[in-house]
Length: 512
Image 1 (tube, rainbow, N blue to C red):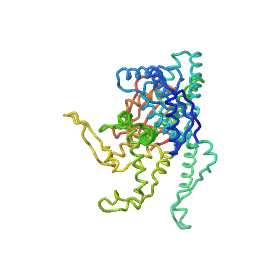
Image 2: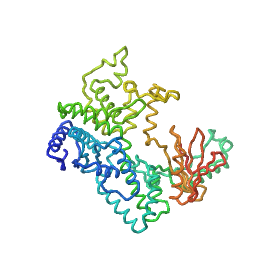
Image 3: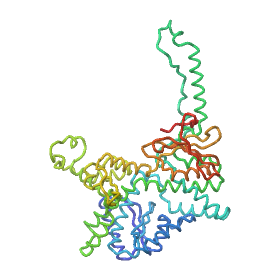
């Protein structure tokens, strides 16, 4: 049961908050204590620039973000209605200048987020005391600045931020201690590749010399496997650098800070559609059924429509998320799922089907607990849903400049969406060999999943990896259906490239 919330709300907003919170609990939402703070827009922009945390490590990017937000406000291009932080207690910020109707909508929205943070499995391993941890990170970085200078520390942070996406969000759910795995796994025994033969013909069909050759090859291969570094392809590049790159202590500490924060924010990127859809579902239900007064209807409708508006060819996670949760609820209320429903035939038979099972609410609570955006879209996006929301692929007409439908094919639309969501739309990269050519060079391999490497984005990252590693760094990547090897030197601004051929030595591992 959620604990009571301490706030700095006005008496009027405090009463609304208590009522909204009680109704949210009545519907089954469960969350950590929510602490509200009402802020003027300047302070709101400052905290938003820090990604919702009042204290962050010193770096120029926070100033740039604040300048961008301030200009957006000044030119009327948008404003922040709320921010909510995954923490225990959960912190939420309300903008002082918002109308009471807006504040009620935001509080209802916040309770949806708070419930999602607490119960979605992908957030289960996040640090629930990140407010304190961010302040601790800031203190540590400032200490390094005092000892090593602002310029040196800021330049190193720049390098770390350029590679902060090279983590493995799934690794926190899996124990992959390679040394322990090797120690526990039984060592493979030699088994000769024998041809079938009767006993008296066996010395001729499987001569002793051939058996010795096979055994020698096996021993050499096993010895080479033991010398592979890393033991298996490694997706968490930042962890690999922390353990094996030649970094000073202060550099290791900063890289560790960037990695910790990357893992904290990773579930938010992995569940953007679900998280915003869930919060929008609940603010819509709570407001329309309980908390919108007659005099507020027009204002609420205007604000809500702004949240869920989606132009043709656009993508709005609020709209997609809330409509999918509503679709799941409707289908499970009527039994429009599963093998029985799939077997229905005849015009309108599926639309008319209603077994009165009313399992929709139970199902959406289950979905919000288990899934992330990729599995959510993969399992619950239907052809009927795509048609209803006109989620087609569009292209701009070169002559008129108008958007026109390029494809209505459901399979193509779904796969394109999944490509953009998987790994946040970034290609999968692995450390395949950290002793390439026996020279201690770093070799990264691109795992082909249908998504090509964007060379313009990848080259600065490769140059940064070379500087962090202190030796040349290579990237094997598929570009325009051809495999290329890109090479960056630690002190060279140019990146060399060559097409991969049989003459180029292979890394320790193949990544397919």
